[in-house]
Image (cartoon, rainbow, N blue to C red; front, side, top):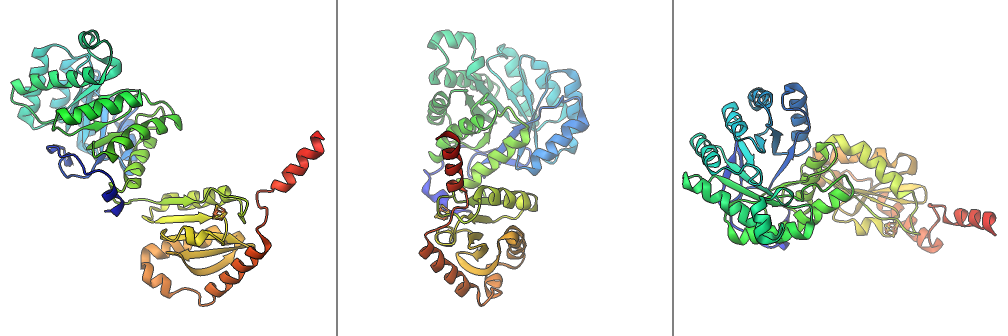
Length: 408
Ligand code: SF4
């Protein structure tokens, strides 16, 4: 576990539930969720998306169960899925019962549109008998009209009260295998609602900013809400709601948890300097080339792309491996120590090759295999560049001259 998690607020204690084989709450790892966009009746299409989501970081996947054909599809999906499946239920209580018959690992009920107490109790009793947990999924946009009126709108208090009422129905049939969400598309409202929920319930909380929209705005809104709460120790499972391929939701969820040090690194973390007047290469192009070359290799390391050798290796010394540009060369470094100097044209290839060896052989072995002249050669380049005061790889001077020629 990354030590950075120690700098966040301690995680709030919640009871633990199990969605299939994934523990949620307590001290279990914070899990990533996403939702399929296929018709659930399309078994092969839905399973293809579930496999893609699982490969991108989703621990749990939700599918809509909106019609009988969807419930029938769930029978096969559940038995062939690599991750637990949750059925999403709105309006139709019989779809919740059918999804339980299909063998789903969890249900999500929306208290805003499933309103009959007898039906709610019946679903909870069936879920109880099958040891299947339910998420009470409150949504500001579909809040129960009575609560909307009573609280004068979709306030944090109204969202939490909606969850509390639903929970009370569940408790009448002795069912408490529950997680709760109080989502809103407004980030400040969502943050306030979850803070209140965390004071009110000891059930695990499922975090999300609903209807966040397409990236990059949707990613920013989701991150603003989810990360703020996680940093306060609130939240046990998360979902980005993006208007995009759901694979982007799973990737974002996983990357956020890794960035916060809340999940172990499973994939690549590419860092790169923002570039400046000292840069010796087009940092954006090199970083994109490195990202493309490393993306599907599943190397669980941090890789740095730095625009100059003057500051690059030092500033990125915590990275597992990196490359810094200087005088038409690339300085390849491991944990800040220069191991090879390579021609600029082959620097991305050299970076990829060394990254694979680093993962296969370990840091000590690759430091021991360092080119013995690399440090001295790199130092000479650094000194020369410091004396020159940097070059102009972004062609700033040429662009300025072109503007002057055109407009003056
Ligand atoms: S590493 Fe070099 S090029 Fe990149 S921002 Fe820092 S000083 Fe500028």
